[in-house]
Image (cartoon, rainbow, N blue to C red; front, top):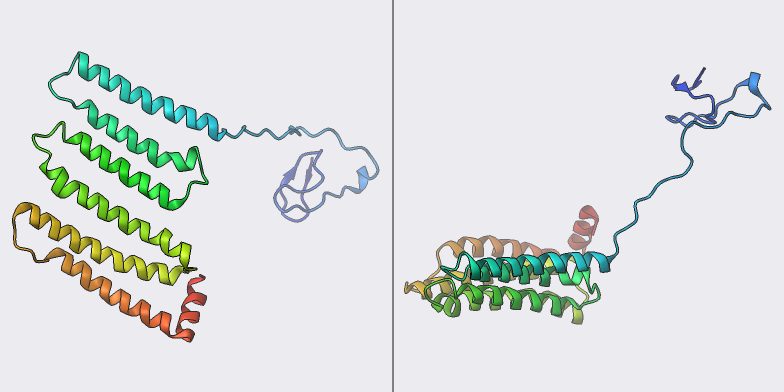
Length: 234
């Protein structure tokens, strides 16, 4: 039995170096002698990585089975309402959201965002078969999803024509956030028949305007811009 001369940890007879501090094991009495076999396995096991194709098949089967079984259960047992359309719409959204990551990673980002927006709109449309009226979908749900999709499409379009860094992207984001909030509140008020003025979105607008002014100041001042990038590491 031997110990490490550096850290004092007990060593196996077959070790050539300390497992903690990696100090070479030097035993003058055993110089030139053959070390005994190591008690530890030499083969390093590795779990096989799941292939993207197999993962895609699994996700497709699970979502399809969930939608089909809920539809059969709805038609044969609990048939008071078309509640299975909610499950079908959610499964459709999950499949569309997972498609770029699992099936086709080279899909353009603008097409991915467009497909996401369409899938959410279809899911909300299926909800109209469960609710008493589809007025909320035409006047509230569909316009909100459409405007949100357009706001999301701005970033890939700008990135296609301009080389945007972190600060310009942040400026665009803090311009779109208050615009979406104001449009959302005005649309909700119009749907409810209330006067067209902003209340809670004004708070978001005020905060974002202050942030936008600060970002514009940083972008227009080269020394300040370089200092911010150096300190924030981007």
